[in-house]
Length: 307
Ligand code: CP
Image (tube, rainbow, N blue to C red; front, side, top):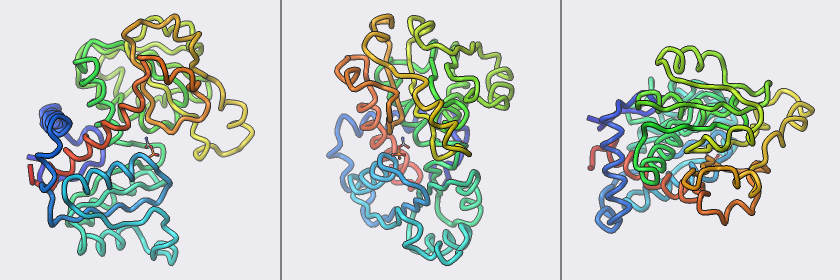
């Protein structure tokens, strides 16, 4: 039963509950007109303490396409946060007005704190370098729709694996599906944190290798998940400049990839995927962004208990 629950961590829902969301999302994709009145009379609040294009707009579009309404801020300085109001107090007020809240915050754990004080479901829309569970829902739905399965894949994660919260959430969520292997492609300084290697990969006997050159491993992959180097999480600009162009996927690198490999990216991209790749049939990142809205429609409907 998902009604009334919060989504803070990708492991908050078991695989059966995730499947419920995917089944609904698939039906929404097929027959969106069936769902245009589903959330009538309900209000979503989007509290974004950090910039966003896809997550905020897709949440808002999702609620509007379900017939609901939206309030919120995308610039915390326009709210009483600028006067020093805490996350706990903010949600205790907003939950008097809204039926469900999506929150993005630069500080890890803030949506969790919000969920401890809120009377309505809180959805973590990204907390610092920690987790991004609705991007993970998006990624899982995309993989399932395009590859037909969430099991038996060799998945290359490439770029900033240290600060990239989408990567952390995806590895956690996929750890419950069988026979997936990982190729972790990053510069030494941006390797996947040890706690994820130990507590998720090693603990579940999941095979993984680390690599530094994308061209050495691209031929083995079923999924290549590219990520941006997260400038906003660096302590100094020099390190960012040195590492930002570590990986650039271009057409010549794709020549060595499988014909049915798919390229995903949570976006925004900076330089890590050349624009020429957009024309390749394996480039699925804009489809992925569209699936993000359907995944969030299904999630909102389930947490509100209207589907
Ligand atoms: N993928 C993602 O979280 O994009 P935004 O930062 O634009 O929301």
